[in-house]
Length: 122
Image (cartoon, rainbow, N blue to C red; front, side, top):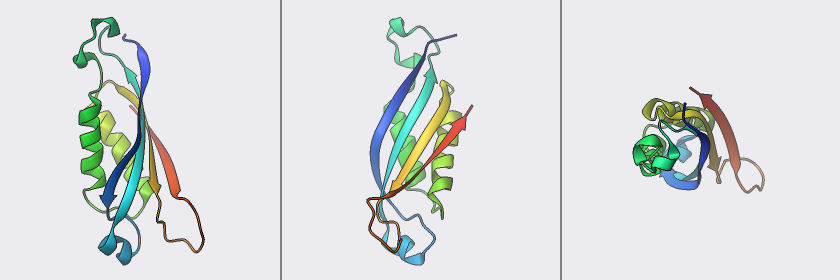
């Protein structure tokens, strides 16, 4: 079968309304997503053809539609949904490690962000 490689999409930013608290839904906030996609080329890479790989413009649009779509209470669920959808939409993806960062997590202290990574496999 085709060659195995990794596509990394780092720090994709979206405005959304995820979280447990009503204020999070009302106010919304930015979320940041990293997608580390393990891809098996569906043809030889030396052919240099888009059909053998994952169009990361389309992958970005798919991530955006999920993040800005329906509200999830947990960023873990959001990360899982992104990974599963990418694998379903792009048959070349064998594994999707999705990290979601929430900079304004409602915690009683000072922190840069909260993040979670979920790994989904074909």
